[in-house]
Each structure stands twice: as structure tokens, then as C-alpha cells.
Image 1: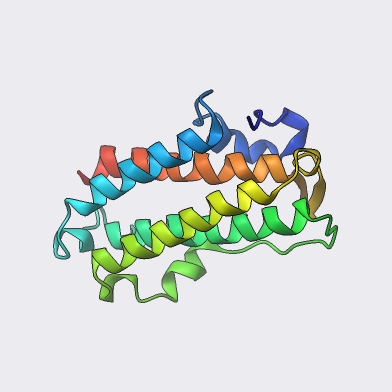
Image 2: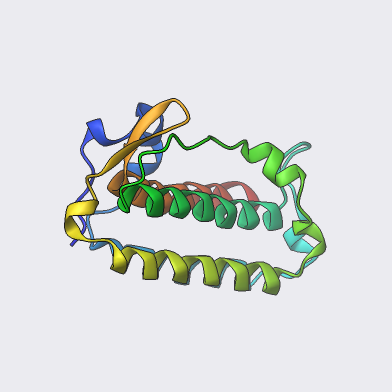
Length: 170
């Protein structure tokens, strides 16, 4: 079982995500969350998936694409850190990422398939990380974080956006 990261394993900013992860087994949480995302977004047609709850806000397609992109980036960081690579890793600007995509032109089905593939890759990667590697730490942009911290950021970040979708879009 992957234990929850200690507060010194991640930047204070990430409390908002990590606090959203329940105490159930990590892989169970990721699978349940995947199923919920697939169910919620799977009920939305392409027209409704372009909905923005306010000017300047992302569409539902962009939110789903952002969840997927962020999981990709965080999983890559988790891979590097867990494998003992202590190279300083760069940050990324989520708004630049979304602004330079074609999420709204893709079908919701395509975006869901991409999410499923990335989530499966995260689950597979999780199984390849030795117990002793979860506490390995490296610098990402301006802060230190462990592989375990990144695992919980992945889960909590998706949970954060799932809550926003439920509250503001649906």
C-alpha cells in the first residue's frame, strides 16, 4: 500500500490536491476515479463538452485534456525521480498548454480514450516503482518533491477538477 506523503515531501501549494485523496488504497482510488471521470464525461455530447461556465474559462473538453496533460507531466516526473534521476525538472504553464491544443476540435470519445491510456500508463508505472523509491526526492522548478508526493498530486489534481466540473459545469 502506498502511504500518504508527509508534509515535507511536497510544496505547500500541493496541499490543495493531496488533501482530496482519501485513505483508501492508492490504486483503488485511481481506478474508482477513472471510472467516475469516464462516467461523467461519457454522458456529455460533443456540443455540451464545448461549454464554458464563464468567459475565459476552459471548456469541458479542455478540462479533460488538462487533467490528462497534467497526469502525463506528473507521471514523467514521478518516473524520473523514482528511478534516481536528480536532474532539476522544469515547471510547466497549464494555460500555455491548453492554449496550444486542439481539445475542442477532438471528440469527447477521443479525449476519454487518451485519458484512459494515460491513467493506465500511470497505474502500470506505479507497479514498477520499488517501495524504497517512493521517498526519493528531486527538485521540480523551485521546490523539492518525492515520487510519492507526485503520485498523490496526480490523484488529487484530477479530483480537484472533477469537483469543479460537478459544481460549475453540470
